[in-house]
Image (cartoon, rainbow, N blue to C red; front, top):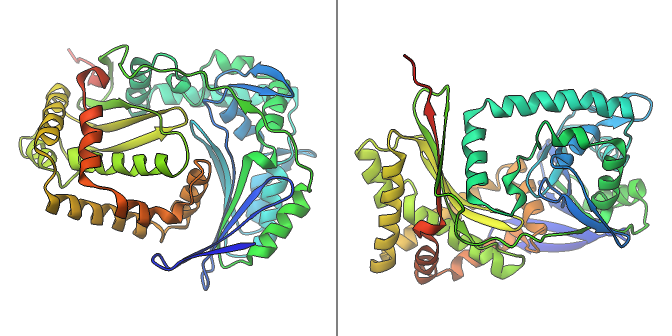
Length: 426
């Protein structure tokens, strides 16, 4: 395996690409009893259209999440979660808009747990009966999501903000689309996106890197399988189809999501630099130490629930903030006004340097978390970037880049506001 040292972070990464195409990354944590492993596919809810073996296919919305649920089934009615528990480990999984991750953490029996993780994620087993049974479970989950104000306010925002990008559709799909999911659909999507060449195995813990790579090759074989080609015909204007959307639910006080549409980032070093510029721009505009945050807080327009940042998903990106407020429209106007002010007057050097040091410090401290480290190594790997290089990127960013970003993005035509008001009680 290739060893890469990062003296500034006191980190070491071992990396190897196996003959089957799987990338293996190991971050040693000597002396720790806990080990964590992520087995991740570069496949999420937005990837419903793809080509494999020269043939185009379109899967129903929600299939990536459905597939995540069904991967825990193994032939012989084996209970994967129970098998992990018997090894003293906990296991779980999640589906996002652009990736699906399966993981476990343990303090003993690491190699046995790793073999089990690789086995169940690489073994598709879908019967008509089990797929039908799961439909009811996921339908209930969809219903719960539709009753959750935090989910509704964001999903309403995405539907109002985007015309073409599949972020308009919830990760879970809808009650209608999941009825189109069959065992054949699941097998096709597993074959297209669960090939080793589309996946990453990342381990953090006191483990032997070479042993991790050896076990992965033994479990998955050396054959390089074809990978589905994602169809991303998501041409999206930078204006929003709707400027605002409102709904009423059982909430104690009004809540909102506010976002500004940004150009998709792409991949590689330039894209990651743009992401970190955008992250600093969000901090300068409405971060907790910003002039605007303090003003709105003192005026009682926002409270401690307010927060935000830069969000990037395959094919789209946005500057997003959210919170509770009796006057979300005032928040929107204040952000637009502050964006104009910063673009006109610039960012004081002292504020810029303080903000950059703070952001860099937060990222460095997050490396103390096994979960945060594993997640970010995986997410940035699929963007063709070595995450542990983030300090050098931060050092290169200038205040002018932040101001240029704000000047381009903080525009009324790029802005969309989603509000959930309390139901009137009479």
